[in-house]
Image 1 (spheres, rainbow, N blue to C red):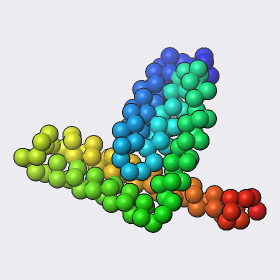
Image 2: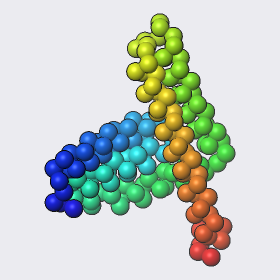
Image 3: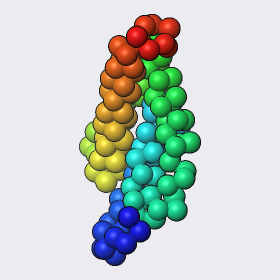
Image 4: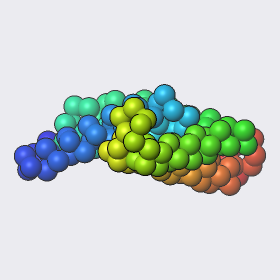
Length: 142
């Protein structure tokens, strides 16, 4: 892995950094932002193998956060409302000229944040549901 083409390493570094930064931003929003932090770290570790040792602790925390985000119907509803709110805010920022930082650049970033939040929420729900199917309801394997 350490002998990758410099162009490939550069692309992995840029993509990993962007995904990691988006994940960090999503940590302050309701939803499983740690999953994006994990994805960014995995991409960065592919470019820089010394980061590999940080993946497993982040993976464990990300899976705990994903399970927590869908632990109750109230949390799911709150996360869905936050995602839809971000999308709605993005449309408002794109259309209404008098809001601060108005324009489609801000609007699209809000819309994408909402979509990422909803996609991660869906992933978390599927992951937890699949995990529950593999156990007997008490967290023990069948």
